[in-house]
Image (cartoon, rainbow, N blue to C red; front, side):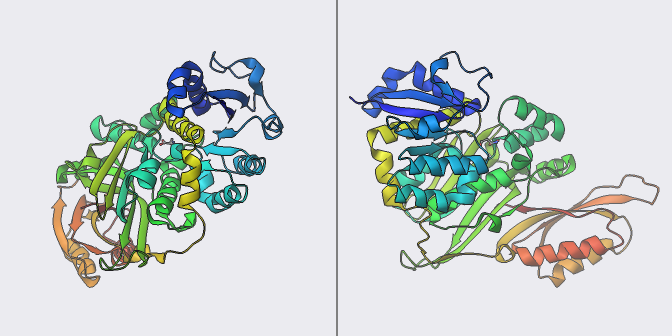
Length: 442
Ligand code: HSE
């Protein structure tokens, strides 16, 4: 059996995990792929950095040309991360006749069309299971297991770092900074953790899922996103009191006439945001660095995918699965059939965020004096927003008089109507701090 010769481009956290699985479990992999998968080259930036013991130093190089110019290498695994260098390397690798496996969600979210077009032109495949949800086979589920369905919605906890931070803050009262430092120590966070906590990483992953689930080529900049950096312990506590847990969710819903034909278009709403979920819903129970994706299909109904979404071996597990699929010849056929990022329109357009219906949680810090609650209620009523519950706790003494938190849950409203009220609240003299609000996911 002719082995599949593979080059690793990058040998940091994930690359080392891939090397470890390939070199420590050759029998298992040969049995599943139908032929051996051989690690032939490892390209690194810094050859002096320690690598796993199993990687022979004779195959380590700093020169990508050693891969580009070697016809014996069939597949390159891009696990360097970042966008600019990785984009150039992937395009060159495809042009040099290599199939590519990548874990690079930013690359696909920002340049998916260019990368997939290059793959098609050079008749080479791009496999990317590791780019979303770490070890969870969500790309495989959407492209194979759920292929009979029109996906109607998906909701994901797609950033392990944020989920780890929110779990720590909710369950142990850990500070935001301490929880972030621990997530970095455990290897969950991106090199630049701002991408995790501001929602960018989850939005990259949502752009990829939107392409596979809905065939929607969403410009990354069109995904509205809010991160977790400003979340306050008080809101986590009030959410708990109301029966909710705050999670950073990446969500997509297709709004389409149920009687429409298969190419019947529709509007797709997408966002990344902290969302309040009822304690007992499945996604609210996902803790620590775990990821989960809830997918609703028109034939299958509700399905849920859960597992480790970040870290060395879960991500390596997904990369090696792609290598096995390439060795067996399956990944090439899937790549050809799915025609992802091909620019072909299926009539689905983006729904403006302002038109998305949602319930909302709102916290205002207000002066405790006559007429304030009435004024707040009047602004909500003027924007056709109905109040579902109100909590006001007794105030803390302050030099300016009593300031109290006013917590309001609304009934379903148009997002645009709700956000217009925020601007008005923030102009009121009786409101003493910027308004805090989150969508409620039920
Ligand atoms: N930084 C990412 C996370 C790693 O925390 O989920 C996987 O993409």
